Length: 373
Image (cartoon, helix red, strand yellow):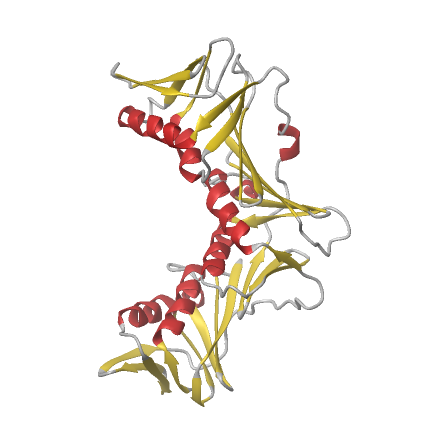
């Protein structure tokens, strides 16, 4: 292998690969990436066996060849090199990297003994997904993906639910439920289709979309227990999680007794920020008291210190009181990119509160259970 390649183009793809490979895997090969120079392209692969990424980029190939190298080491080297053309070549069992007097030699395996990443034919069965809306959805509902180690691993991912031209996404951490709904999908699925994508796949998909060209379509394909996303010369592969996700639709019915409150997002963010100095492990309950045109929010810490904030709000009706975990509420409002959020609240704090907003063609619904006052 001997080639020359643009440093910025190379670094862009290495950034994606580095997010896939395992940094401290007990299986040594999984901290490495695969490189193959062929014709006028350099092909890269990285995998942790559950998630995999294949990319290709244009290069000036003088000699074709294959090599397996430590992904993070190559990423760290290329990251500190100046812009311009980089030279790479194999000498014995090392990959050499040279740029304007800077020289590196990295131990390598000069073979193709790398884990197989499945392929998918997108020209046959695939769904075109909206790129900008997908970035919004990933950035928004990820706060409700479960991070704890639990038996039901389906909650450690995101539920994709296709039904005709509609696509719903759902994430839950057992304390909150976040649902995003988009209409206008032309799906190849004959009937309702759903599956659970891991959090890692979901977040890596966002990174892949963000560096894609404007003209590149985002395609999704499924083959049994495997899911594939393609954008331009990049394909993200993932094994699906067991589909034991909660019946999220059963929660999407507000109480008929619920009252409507409309929050100004900036005002709500300000109120929560002003209360957070007293937030702690044992002082996480923010109490809201609503009356015509105003709410008063208060938080008390374990030593008895109290913070009280009063803000305007769009509400008319009988006064009532409710409480929430301030951390869950703060996380929600920090990802809301809208001027207002409508809330459907149970005055008795016995059922979920529904926070709803619309952005960029997507309807969002965030459910949170009130705390006992």
